Structures are given as C-alpha cells and as structure tokens.
Length: 404
Ligand SMILES: [Zn+2]
Image (cartoon, rainbow, N blue to C red; front, side, top):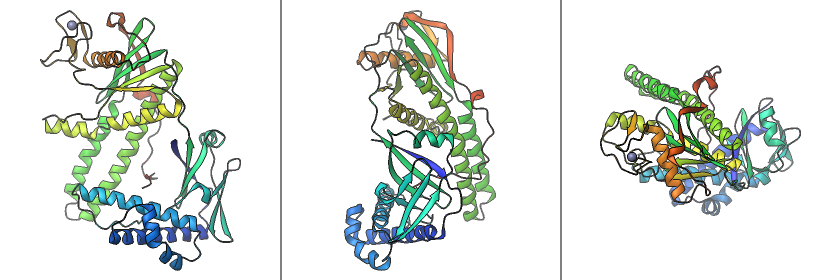
C-alpha cells in the first residue's frame, strides 16, 4: 500500500473547539510518553493498556478514537527516543511542543467534492474545517482509486494521507541507466538499436549546500556567546536549505520520470547501500551532505506510485570497468575513461553503461539487450537543467515543517 500526504491550508482560522482539542491531544501525547518511559514500553497497544483508564478520567469527553491516536503518536516519539539513546546520542526526555493531532480514517469525514472536513471533538460536538482546494488538490480528491488514510491537523493546515495499492509496473520498451554524481545524473538511454547519452544537471544543489554550510559556521562564530540564539538561527538556516534542495530534487525526479513514462522505460540506478566512506575528510563531508539517497528515494517512490519499473544494481567497479572489453582500470582517471582497447567515453556516462550491463546480465532489465558499440557519441539528451526550474525562490519564512 502506498501513501501520499497532501497538505491543505485552511480557509479560516481553526475553530476554538478544534484548537483546544489540539491542546488536549498534545497533553495526552506527552503524558503517554512519560508513562511509557517509566514502564519501558513503546508500542501503541502496550501504551493503551497502560494508560487508557487514567486518561479517560482526565479527559472524560475526548473522542475515544483520538485518544488511541495519541498513543500511536506517543509510541513513535518513544521509538525515536530509544533509537537515539541506543546510538549513544544523549537526548532529554522527549516533549512535544508543537500543536498537532492525528486522526485515523474512521475518526473524521472528508467530503471530497466540497473539501470540507467533519472532525468530531467529543460526543455531540463536531467542527467543520474548510480546506482551500487548488487544481493540484483536485487531482487527489477526484481520483476515486485513492482511499483516505489518516488526517494530521496543525494550527493552520491539515495533511490528508491518500492511499492506493501499488500499480503493477509496466513491461519496459526501453531503459534509462543513471549514474548519480554530485552535480548531475549522467547516463544512457537505450531504445531498440539506439543508445544515447542523457543528462540531468543540478549544480545548484551543491552550491546551496556549501553556502548554507558557510553561513551556519559564520553564525556559530558570531553568536558564540549565546547558544540559544545560535541554535535557533542555525535551525532556521537548515529549514531553508532543506526547502531549496528538496524543491530541486523533486524537479529532477519529475523530469526523469516524465521522460521514462513517455518512452515506457525502466530506470536503472546504483544501489547506494554499503558504500564505503573515502579517506578524504572534506570530500566525505561533501558526499555525506549531498542527498543522493534522498534523490533516489524520491525517484523510487514516485516511480512506484506511477508504475514505472526501477532496478537497482551493485555499483562495484562501475566507474573502472571498460564496457567493451571488460578490463578493469586501477589507475586514476580524468574526466574521460580511456581503455587500452581504444574505447573512450565521459567517465560518468561510462559508469552508467556498466550499471546497465550489470542489470542486463542479471536479467533485471526485462529482456532488453544492449551493445556498447551502438552508443552514439555525439548526442546528449538533456532531461533536466537548472533553467527549467526558473521561478521565484520561496522566501523561507512560511516554513513547511515535516510531521513527526
Ligand atoms: Zn576496453
């Protein structure tokens, strides 16, 4: 089952009753977290058994379903806390500050035509939340193959989870193999007897990260006398950076998937699990900051939602192997891969050819074949370039923060 959270802003302020429900919900979550820590339990059911009776007395009128969701939220807070404690990161007793609540799909009603949510508060008391519905939202509301999942209510907006069964991926007619680099995805597109280089460039991602990294460092120095302010400013920088980069990664993923969908291609990516860190500290920092896993995650997720097949292969030696003769080069290379057999090609595109050959040899590319000799050296198809994202930069003050 696939889930997609869609944000809706509210047409007016949250009604008073709903606001106090959020406050009660937060109280219940924080109480459950403390009770769970004491009794050393983290599962929703265990928390429920442990604390339901007491809460019922404290919040006699709260809708029972909401109370159960509060245990669920508390459970996930506790699990995060335990994970961090296991890793040795000192974390204080978790306390939820943000006003939020979660309602399971039986605990609210959404009229998909009018965009009005009916949210029960307690017996005999319901509130209506009017959502602002744009064309983007219509796409989800009108699609009857999507069912409704949980609802997350925040003071100014709600997040509705839409669910569907994963569609069966199509049988590919062609294949795109992509090597992931710091500033671009480079690869090859193969259809029939034709193989062409493809490229999706996103040089700004690294630039944005460097700029924010420098700015954070400067802030820390400048505000060294006040840790609280320094932390707050750095957090804000982090949120902005996150938005700017996410926006670009989504754009890149969308262009790649659009290309793949139009040509019924399978997508080959390298499997990044188990990549060993290099010895150069500065390079490591840059590599670990650069969200390639995130880009892969976005591509895979969107592909799954749209039924586009994605294949992941072991990238070992992919940047060192000659796709023509199979020799492995152990010496360092420049921007171009050169082999004794006479084969030469852009280093990154060469790597993608090897990824593709691994996928084909493992039978993961749906019976497609590929001959490196058919590669057309003079053509590059641009899947994405920065100019395609030309739009005004969000100013970063209307922070959209993820839900825990
Ligand atoms: Zn060779």
